[in-house]
Amino acid sequence: MHGRVRRVITDEERIKKKKKLEQYSKLRNSVFEKIKSGNFDEEAMQISAAFLLKNADFVTIWNYRRQFLLSQPKGDELEKHFQEELNLTKDCLYDNPKSYCVWFHRSWVLGHQSNPNFEKEFLLINEALKLDDRNFHCWDYRRFVCKISKRNIEEELAYSETKVNEDFSNYSAWHYRSELLPQLYPPNDISMSQYPIAVEKLLEEISLVDNGIFTDPDDQTCWFYRNWLAGKREPPLTLLRVYVDFKLQIVSLCFSTAVELDEFSIALEFERNRIVDFCWKASDNSASTRVFYSQLECKFCPKFKGTVNFIKSGKLQEFDSTISICGEEIIAWQNDNIACLNCKIDERVKESLLQCRNQYETLISMEQENHWPVVACIGITDILQDDSKHLKTFENISHLMKVDSKRINMYRYWKSMIFIEKKLACEISDLKNCDLYFLGNGFDFQKVVSLDICNNMIASLLPLQYAVHLRELYASGNQICSLKGIENLQGLMYIIVKNNRINETIKLSNLKYLKMINISANPICSCFNAVKFSDEFATTATIVYDEI
Image (cartoon, rainbow, N blue to C red; front, side, top):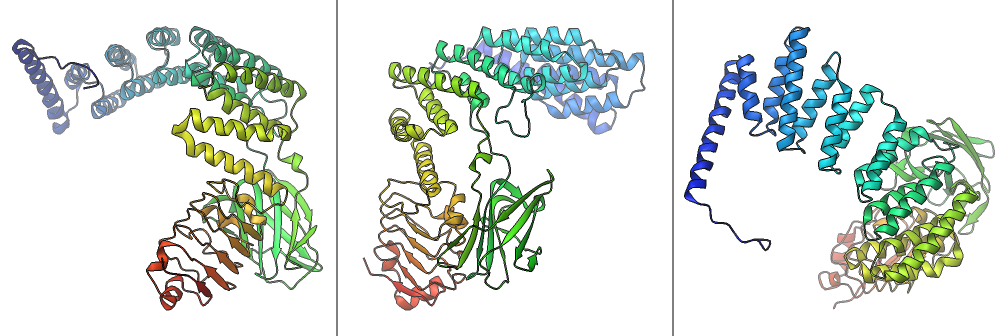
């Protein structure tokens, strides 16, 4: 198997193996006899120690050893037992250096000792990391020892740099730096910064990680760390849009990041009518999301204003309606201060990112099969909001689909999401014939009233669950298999989904304004007649269909 020739076991080896198994079984049975008798004493500790040297991953035995230690009175005798446990775990680790049970037990013992020898522990850790510098169990244990010993963070940062310079592929060492750096070099303005550490140190780290990248461009470790340093961050929490739909008698909200219901409160004012009691629902029925809506019993009013209170931060945001949509069916407010979503990029960082992008583009020309620099270039362009490189971004994504075909659907999603974000930002909802495979995350569809996605390769309408004000949907000529995602869009009047792959019905009884649905040239058309369709879709709307 796996290209290895199976070795024939000799009779002598078979006898040795059998004898070893008998010894193991005898020890195991002796330990469990002690456990059953309820007499886990000093003798049981000795027997179980011998057993654990043969099988250190028997978590039950470690539990009983801890129970025994907790039952002993404090004093020199207990400290002696603790030292014996440290010796036992050390012996076990030589045989099995990645045992969860052993590292946990050693941590437990060290945490219960009255005067631990931390220097001795660091010598053991350093020795273990010399043997395997990516042993994440050992790195976790190092963090634990540093915490209880209150070790100097600068010493640990220097140690991590030593390990990184020894091997740029040491993911654990890079990860350790990502935990230490924010403690030593916190962002200049934590509330607004889009960087994880202070700008001055950030530039140094970019230089350090680039040394690793250009040493071995195919190694993913440095690319991941670079993305942590200067990748796109989640924007600060703010309210993006408020839509009041007088026809549907609902109000919807869209936030910049996901929030929970208990994290905000809203007050709306229509002339002299102030409303604060809302029953918010998540469009996707999740506990934390970006789009919420609530029923709103209110007569038409051409303007509104309001405030949102972000409870955790105590921040207040005020807004006044600015636009009307669908005649005067919808009155809306949109946050024009887009800068609030993308914190201002420090000029030094901008210069560094531009330099990195130029270097990575050179690397792409030299190593055309390497997808990592291509991904980095796309990310940098996105952060810089560089519209002059818009077409180049799509060229790069197309290139990724060729050189990294295993992730082709991820790149298709990425391309679709970037394209849709750009279009909807320009208030363009005509997305037909755009070679789209996905509808992105769907949050921006909250503001869409009419949507045309005909003649693409879209398979799912689920992201449209956020399009709570949608009136018309044109989605013919795709690969849609189900109408799931639009069944609760109360305002939908026209649904055109001809020439797809729809093979199941879905109840549309919540679509009280639905006038017509066209499902012609779908597999489901051969299954029902007009009456049956009305029953299956639970609607009185006109259903246009044909038989294949």
